[in-house]
Image (cartoon, rainbow, N blue to C red; front, top):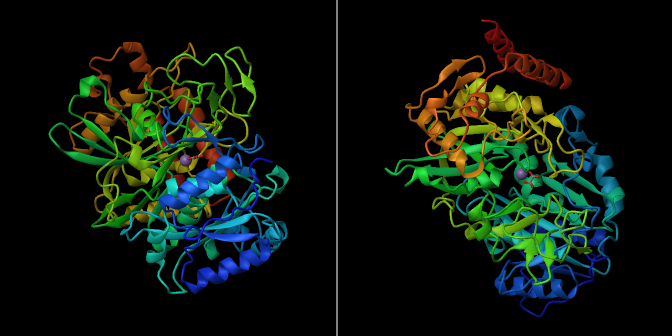
Length: 601
Ligand code: OXD
Ligand code: MN
């Protein structure tokens, strides 16, 4: 099988960055004794190491060479076709009690789970190289920054983590020699990439992750969903900060006034596009910059929330990315990028559905089969991905490395909803905003296995990522609010509302600047709004729609409230809260009652 390449033996000076911390060495020894690798490769993230690993990956078909003139220093990886998305059904939170994991997580008893995983890992790396990857999440000098180590038998993981994290010496330095220092232990083995032996297990109390049987990014780049969100959210609650599934962007007016905004949208709902937004011509002089596209860690400082992006790169959905939808992303992925599960054109270029220009007359699809525009199958998998360094983003915010983070003026929640939910509205206050987040819903996408297009509640876009009881998570949000003297304003957006003809009413992409501008106006106390039962709603004239080709009826529909739909929505909120079995804080139940009552006024 293509991913299960044999051991590699580096020349001297590569693969020997052994850390000094005894706790790390003991742990590596324990995992090596269990998994029996042919050799251990201590990663340092250097250019030389990277070049060596790329060369080996090309030899062993882990990577496929692209035309280096068309996409310099970029490669294609094909995952096993049975392994193309996050697997929520095989993802576990292993807390001592089921109650700690709560109603939204799969729970598994820690002692039994460790025993099961030990069984699966016994001898699993025989004949393979075991890589030990030190990394940090967060800027080098941030108080929020965390150290992680990932052990893996996949070169693809090493190459990807080098893009997605700050890797090597920086982590060893941050950890130091104290054996009792806090760091995350991550163990990953491909095993035989068999869905029947695929498990992603989190042990929050031990700051440990074990992932087996998958090679797909979301399951195996343990820095990301596993550490920065699931374990991160647990640490955040115990340590008094927030780990959220949020992009962070900066928006600067022509006069030089700057705000930062964090936004939580579920997977594959346009976080990366929003974070890299280019304002339309009408907004001359406005600038949007990216701090992060997927994860935000926030802490309280001087009564405000300050955010950092713990990641160093983007692991974004490829299909639909074009110079029309996201020019900054197209520039970012035009070099130094690892593509996973896109199509390979005959000219050695990458191709996917929604890319600019005509499809190639012939290509090799994501499975490695011949493909032509007449083929029934998609050329690229709907969840195919790019892994690209954030430095490639032409709109990268200059303060992305600032340890104290950037001050957040607004938090935006949003989902993919064909009906009911208006284009944008503002919560009355923090607690009402927490309610908006807690009752968020979205039509499911290809980012996780399972049915696509089903409306599911996805509180704060954290349903698959909250590493502890969701009721305690809601309470944590409420508690954070009590500590904020200058809280961000909270908004809800929906770019995806459809008209009776089934077509999207809002153009989206760069035009979302018009909504962002209203949000900034509200933060500055200048934007107009009407009080509605669900929150502050802009009237059509409160949004700057100049030079936008949109029908006035469409705008009315986008900003309208259908009372019948909202009765159903409020009933669905109740059903969702009831399904959580009594963990929802009283304050949020009260918010629902108040919402229902406002519709009766
Ligand atoms: C992601 C996801 O990959 O949310 O970011 O699934
Ligand atoms: Mn995500």
